[in-house]
Image (cartoon, rainbow, N blue to C red):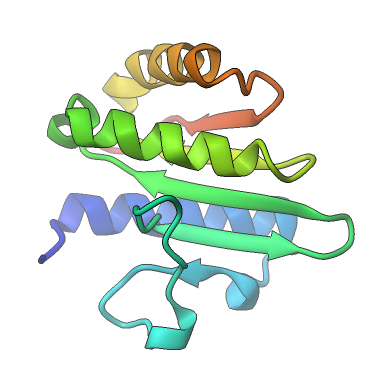
Length: 136
């Protein structure tokens, strides 16, 4: 499925944030679901869903899953199921995080949605980050 220009910008923001926060600005260890990525550089399926960004570190061991959502996508049932799956996977690895990139006007909704999903899946220990100040 072709990705919108807005979605691609949000994915780029995710990659930049994860590279800076976890890999000293080296995006080489980050798997990205994009048309430009080779099959070996794409994220694995997580409970049937492919995240936009996926990165694991050995030392300290942790996992970062990133997802970009446009305004329309964020409110879908598919997104709820997808984010719940990603939270459950992050809950299996200590000090893991789910990072969500959404247009700036959807950040409050995104944070509330993640809190609800964390409670439902009983994974409150998973760090969640909603990137803000992104164009939308």
